[in-house]
Structures are given as C-alpha cells and as structure tokens.
Image 1 (cartoon, rainbow, N blue to C red):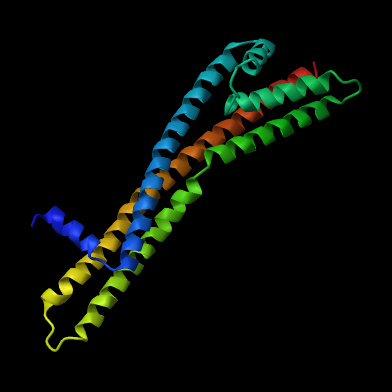
Image 2: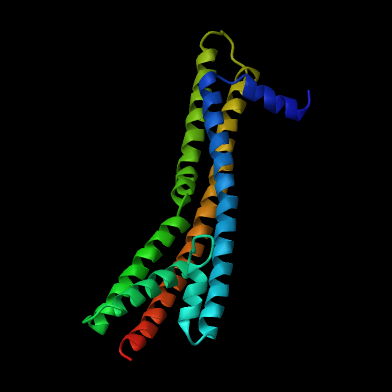
Amino acid sequence: MTPDHSFIDLILNASLLVQFVMLILVLASLVSWTMIFNKRLLLKRARNDADLFEERFWSVEDLSPLYTRVSAKRYEPSGMEKIFEAGFKEFARSRNQDKIDPENIVDSSQRAMRIAMNKEMDHLETNLSFLATVGSTSPYIGLFGTVWGIMNSFQALGTVQQATISMVAPGISEALIATAMGLFAAIPAVIAYNRYSYDVERLINRYDNFMEEFASILNRHAHS
C-alpha cells in the first residue's frame, strides 16, 4: 500500500464526526484561498488605479475636465477617483447656490468625500473578517476532531484484554490528520489577513491624505 493510499484510507475509515470536521476544514481552506487570490487582485488594482489617478490629478491645472472625464466613464469610479468625484460634485453643486459661505461649501465637500471614502474602506475590507475567523478557529476545529478521534481509539481499547500500539495507531493517525488540516487552513489565512490588513491601511492612508490635499485646493477655490 502506498503512502497516498494509506492517507486516503485513514480519512475514509475515520468516524463520521471526524470526517465532518475534515470536510469543514477543507471547505474553509478552499474558500479562504479563493478570497486570498481575489483580495490580492483587488488591492493590486486599487494601488495601480490610485497611482494613475494621482499622476493625472497633479498634472492638470483645471480640475473640471478631469471631473468630466471621470464622471463620463461607463463603469462606476472607485478608490481615489470616487472620492474626487464625490467631492468635486458636491463642491460644484454648493457653489452654484446663492448665499452659501465658502467654509460651508468646503465642509459639505469634505462630508461627501468622507462618505465615499468610508464606502471604499468597506469594499477594501470585505472578506478580511472571514480570513481572520478561519485563521483563529481552524486549529481549534481540527483539535476537536483530534480529541474525538483519540477518545474513540482509547474507548475501543476497553473491549480488548491486551492493548497494543498497532491497535490505536490508526485511530490516532486519523485524528492527527484533523489537526494538520486545521493548521493547513489557518496558517495561510492568518498570513493573508495580516498582509492585506496592512495593505488596506496603507491605501486608506493614501485616500485620507488625498482627501485633505483636495480639500485644501477646494478651499482656495471657494475663497477665490
């Protein structure tokens, strides 16, 4: 019997509860890996979009054509573009009204940008809580399967007069597989959660800095 077949046999011969624990861990691992790859693409695209938009933003003197170009896109703007669009739209709307204090115009633009940035934060942080949950709970789920499997192995010894290591080895082996699966699901999720949380925080800081700089520009225009 090959090692692969022995591994598969241990899983197939495990108790139903241990098999159920293994199934949960396999599904959690598959879902977390899917989210890891999707989140990686999302953050990479967000960073690239921020780089391109900042380059365009600081290279123009008149922001009106840039706003027209952003708002005319077929798809919904995201990231820094969305914050810019929300702020400039509110600035133009408020400025066209009579008897509005310049400070109020800037304040309303900042509120609009803050709302847009909060939505972008929610979008960037999507699924991070799931990765944290998988990383923190998978080892305990695997440990539960291990404890249950070992308990069944020792209970089976009560029905025999002479116990040998060969009698309990298969049960303990199948139980330890649950622990290994728990670690296999948890470790990538924890690493990805820490890494992506750092990347999201850096992006949010970039958005916040841009918002403050853009608000200063709007403040100068409001008082001009």
